[in-house]
Amino acid sequence: MKVEQISIFLENKAGRLAEVTGILGAAGINIRALSLADTSDFGILRLIVNDHEKAKEVLKEHGFTVGRTEVVAVEVEDRPGGLNRILQVLFDASINVEYMYAFVQQSGQNAVLIFRFDDIDNAVAVLSRNDVTVIEGQRLYAM
Image: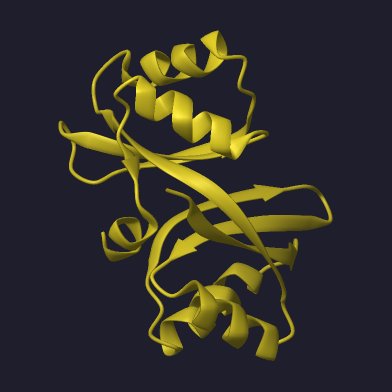
């Protein structure tokens, strides 16, 4: 029930993001979801891709520092209060959300949330017990 996310550390300068996406595109790697956080000196690009092993390999070949993190993907109804329901379940179980990002597949249906938790196994169990759909990695990579 865990999803493989890659993190790329980028200098905060023009063209670095385009360089990463160009490398991935040339290698036939499709980005399924992303998040970019930055400071004045560097950024962390977090990606869910259709082939994380190949992505790590080609980015490292081009000199990028690439990390791997396990995250959890869940479906949430794309409606007011959908996110809050999931966050309340997590809060009630004292599970900390380290970070999250989201994308909508088709407006008005379900959104997909990507979570990084401090206790990933407990989070998956709590979400599953509360009828939250946890998305398997292979399904997410193919979306």
